[in-house]
Length: 253
View (cartoon, rainbow, N blue to C red):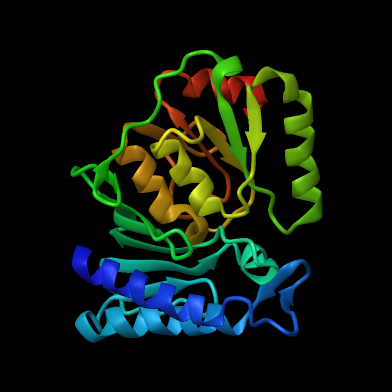
């Protein structure tokens, strides 16, 4: 399944790059939420590639309805995570593919086609960036940490997130948002970021990256400091040393 997942991500990345820089008119599927021809083509490419091998599996994708085959396996797909970056010509977006077995993510890939960086994780087998084993940071002090965050399309919830960030602005070494939730989360695994939180995202945004962080030794929970589940909309990630302290600081519970 790992080779199939990589094949699907690479094929989708090729389709995305073929359409990069060719957006003439924006199409909104909801206020402040863009969908492009590349999103649709990428999703179709991924689903077609996987379905050839596993036609009996379920599919949960961003641009289509849930395809329920009553299987214990579900592929969770974001064809372009960071569509606004893609449309704006910012080379920081990703294909995200996760495989869940009985609602638990067991494999995930996050692929940035612009940089050709592939984050890959398999439950119990570690996380890798282009075949290099990943480990999260061991920082204990917030003043040494880079905090990553994402802002959802919902204005009210984004304002709540910004309020939390504003309240704690001077606590961290720096705050960063790459424009892709999947990449933001993966950056914890390779030590570019140390902490991450976001409110009101969908499972396809973070399911693959969640496993990448965990297999690199990090901790992922919801904002109530409970184990993150596919139906959760809020997510917090960090190394295991600082996680509980981080949630208390943000006053998320």
